[in-house]
Amino acid sequence: METRVVSHLHPEGSYDPADHEVPKGLEEIWRFTPLKRLRDLHKDAPLDGHDYEVDLDVAPEVQAGSVDIDDPARGTSTYVPVDRISARAWEASDRLFKVTVPAEAVASQPTWVRFRGNGAEKAGAGHVVITAEPFSKATVVIDYVGSATWAENVEIVLGDGAQLTVVAVQDWDDDAVHVSHHHAHVGRDASLKHVLVSFGGDLVRINASVEYAGTGGNVDMLGLYFADAGQHLEHRLFVDHNNPKGRSRVEYKGALQGKDAHTVWIGDVLIRKEGVGIDTYESNDNLVLTDGARADSVPNLEIETGEIEGAGHASTTGRFDDQHLFYLQSRGIPEVEARRLVVHGFFNDVIRRTGVPEIQARLLETVEAELAKHVGVAQSIASEA
Image (tube, rainbow, N blue to C red):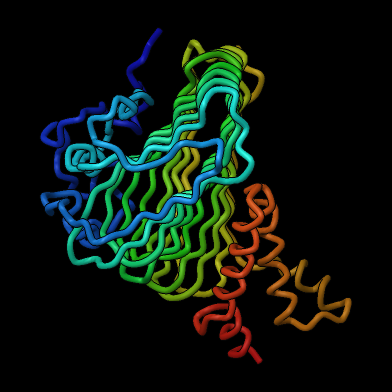
């Protein structure tokens, strides 16, 4: 079976940073990223910062903690860094945060990994491995807050028949820079729900990739982001259908408001010759709330076999739907409230499907707070009045 990634969108992997050229911004995988705002993470900035705290709230059935970087759990996802920052983070990380769901265990509550950065002056590197052993079931939430310049790799490993939900919330302070790669290795008949939520930070760039370790793997990748003035939020997705009868659904939704708010979504599904009978669909929707914001959205499908159940992609970017607003206003709802309801309706399905009540309530509050900001809907409406 072919194991090398043959997609032109994904360079050859290597653990050695020297094997990855310093990006110049012309490369396909870097052309949307403002390199000057990366604080030299892509070059040679030292990754020895330790000004952060990690708090764990662990379900009784789950094992979690900080272990030596040489722990054998690292690398079990078979991930090999495909860009320079990921390789530098792999090399520089000196501790491993490890979460393990034992075989056949069913977690009674979500496990939380709360990361708080205490300063962005010195860059740091991290490594997380989440393992769901065969026929286990659990939810793991990684919550990022505070101030940091942070590069990391997150490995997610599902044994056969495991059911795992992983939610990562980027709720950084305004000065944070966060570059991360999440890679999932999905076992036979296993199910993964992977959720990325990005609201905070100056620049957030997250790659999320999936490969299948056997037939019948099922993956849902959900995303939610809301960019304000000056923010750059970038999400890059890669689903590698390298085994038969797999399923994947990718659905990301984002909103933008304010001058120079910029979001990037790149989705790619590779269906190899071995991916017979797979079923896949990816979509990205963007709601532009004010002038001066920009959303880049590029869905891709690379198909090497026609013997599949289905494959498709979609992307939309637009402003408020005037018909929706007219319908609500015609029933006596003021324009301000009508616009608010449209935004909530836009996000509601993805928020509901995160499956974590604490996260759902927090996201609804965050969306409300974003709408209340002076560069958002409130000001836009006030200027029209």
